[in-house]
Image (cartoon, rainbow, N blue to C red):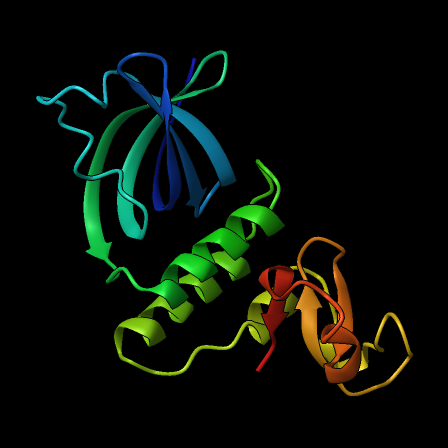
Length: 175
């Protein structure tokens, strides 16, 4: 049984069973982690208030047949808004479990700090940190070098013209 004590961003929570929750975290040391929070749906749970999306937390994870959250403490909260939730969804969809990336962690913290300070955020640095190269990309359909969008589902770049033919919910504006 291994124990990890690390900083994390709560990406998402789902109900699991009668009283438990499944929590998706992006941690500093482990990358994305799916962990169980036992009895987190109880009214007297000490964890439920801390394990909300957009919370940066200090978390203790016990690894035995998967991860279980034993302690969590909020370090910082990001105001809930459409942009913040979209960034969380992007991180959850585009990262793999147990693939630590400290540079991505630093970039995620910086992105949410900019959002808290009412600065405009860009997906371009996140896309680059995930290993895609927008500066050298061509449109996947017409080979135009003026790419503006990134498709999350197809993981390709698209120009303005070609993106108009695609569902806008799967596209990320890179600027």
